[in-house]
Image (cartoon, rainbow, N blue to C red):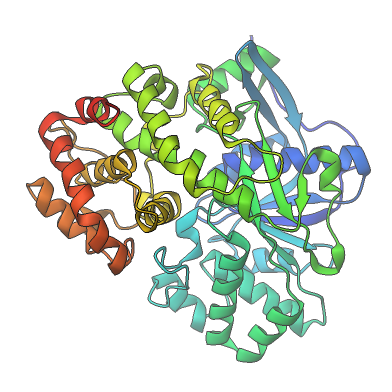
Length: 473
């Protein structure tokens, strides 16, 4: 029997107040849900126009559904479904860049948010500054219709300034340290290349609040779509699948104070996001990546599969033992309790978060997730054998060949560079990859040569499963 397609509920659509760049599964499972909750609790016109910066797939899936979709919470006791209907449309940037700029210049739009992943900021991960040699940035400096996320921000702010409008607040939702300051710096750098007076205007009147976002959101599969249809009795071409847990800490710094009542939806509105950000980047994202590389090499498909292995369960605990001394706990948080909560989230069998998915774009993630912790421990004279093994695991992974001699589909902006830098030996690969200044600062690389070479020698000789077992003894 044919199944009806999901459709938006009949009712008044909220006016658009937010444009979101990079409308992937994470933001639809996280930001859109919070915005829906905020409008339900406190009202306001904060409908969202999403922007796909690369391809039309999300637009094409959502358009027949009038932009509504199903949010599926994968709780251990069974899935829970909810329809989310805060989207007012999805634009595809390469098809019509001016339409995106026009949407961003709508006077009713007061926030432009982003989830474009680390590589979407076109910056140097080792320094956090704009990469002026990035092909999209070279284009965006000389063309009014941009290609990059920073380009869209700068050109839209340029048009708003020319029209006498206030700037929008730029609300980054990506896992980057000091993400508000980073996107502000990238935007100002690009604006200076285009028009120094524009950069001055943005610096004076713009707001770039820092945020910390947290909800594990696996990629949606064809089986997920079938399951949602069975659960709801409606076909949804673009559901999102996520864990029950969610946390959003936001620096309360918006242009003219204009924002949804996020606190009514459970957002932590704070003056300093840094403690939340550091705790999450190091303790969650850092161990997630460590489990992804080493778990993949050991033959584990998902994070839940990985931590169900007793040796990997002990390994992630060892990682936290190395990380916790470098983290300042946010007010009211016990880091040991936070680690226990993370382990329970990782072990949730309903969340099939693939190690391969988490392993993508490692050259962009590694500096934020591991290097700060490693530097802090080196400065304090503490060893980090588990984290050094994680770095070695990344190095082995990006050679593009697994332990069985089979090819790995390495997805990374530097994939070709990484593959060509790798050698036939552990020592040669460590030396070559530590010399990449886009990833490793020179002074830190020099200090890491010894401990990472030791970890790599074990990994190459004995394999990931045995190396993990040995590092926890």
